[in-house]
Image (cartoon, rainbow, N blue to C red; front, side, top):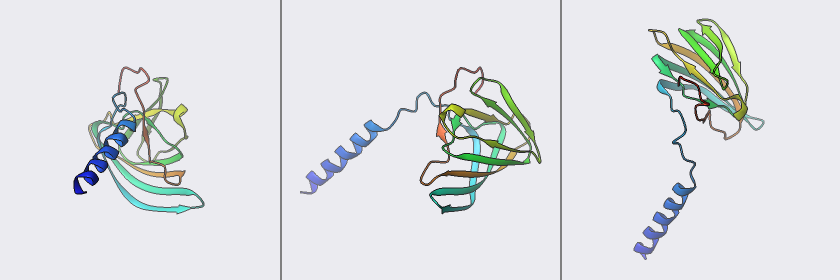
Length: 143
């Protein structure tokens, strides 16, 4: 019986992995660390406040959000690009910005400075949604 149970668990795990989306096309971030400062769920929405640090030369990787993101730059400079490869914002210490939701708003954030970038970010997502969804590079010459 133990062998049958183990076989069943292995089969379910293998089937689950086969159904997972491939991440070969995703552009993972590098040099990014984050810590959750606060979180709650109200009225079917998750509110998550995080502090995100991007090392010099680091990138968030291409991604989008299922909800709206509100951010402020605590330290450093964020260079932000959209899916057209256009730099749609250079945000310095004290600046605030928003990122709209959905896969039609793919973007990347980069720290092109020699000092760490520190952001304070509030995610307002549908309850249970991930904070961000990886996306492939839309053809831009940078990550």
